Length: 281
Image 1 (cartoon, rainbow, N blue to C red):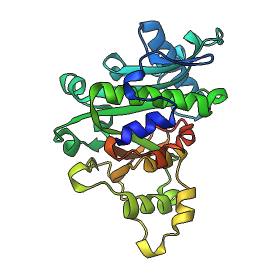
Image 2 (image 1 turned 45 degrees about the vertical axis):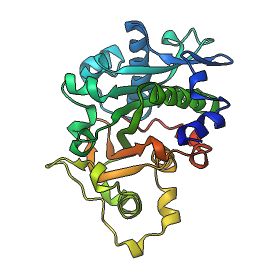
Image 3 (image 1 turned 135 degrees about the horizontal axis):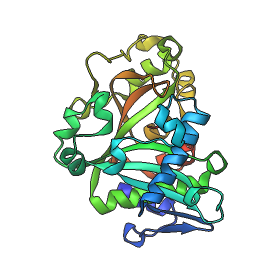
Image 4 (image 1 turned 180 degrees about the vertical axis):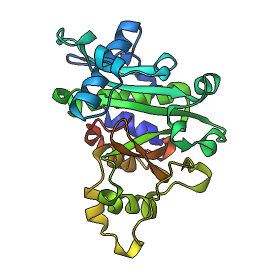
């Protein structure tokens, strides 16, 4: 059985071909946005989570509109989880991921994370790749059913477009590097990506991950200090790129995450509910 097929079994789906948008369970629906209004609803959710809950710094226009947006929204696919019972929320959107495939990115000025990381190794990869970003879930829906739907939909998208690598930025809250030197060093010593797939923080923004010798790292304690989203990707067989970047707007320290889809197995996926943290942008 292929690695991705294990995931579909864990999700209660016999084969990938049985999955089609929309994916429904009870009052939740996962599908791609199909209108400007639905994209605006995702941007509204992102604003509530990133700026009002997590303390990011909005532009004046974002603040006035209560919306998180940038130029990439026009070229990305927007994956939504919609609660059909929530007429009080814009379009009922309670979860979202933003997806950008390589061909679309190349035709439109590159990937979002190229502002922080040199993605040359990934761009040189011969297979299909896609960037995941702007992940967030409404606080009331950070639970197993919502995350099931998000990842059912992502896996369908991976299967549909024959994606071989997922990547994006994942974040530590805060910009004081001294406070996170242990988990950063742990990532460097134990989860650094193979050189052929390893993005590197760009010149002028590069922050060294290797801040402690390997023999000084308490792996159990370091693991506990990783953000849930980063733990989730590591459980899926993920790696990190070389170096971190401070994002002043979001008040975060970002690392580059890379996941080869053929490394995803059922023993990682049973922990997917721990992805319920709005840390990836």
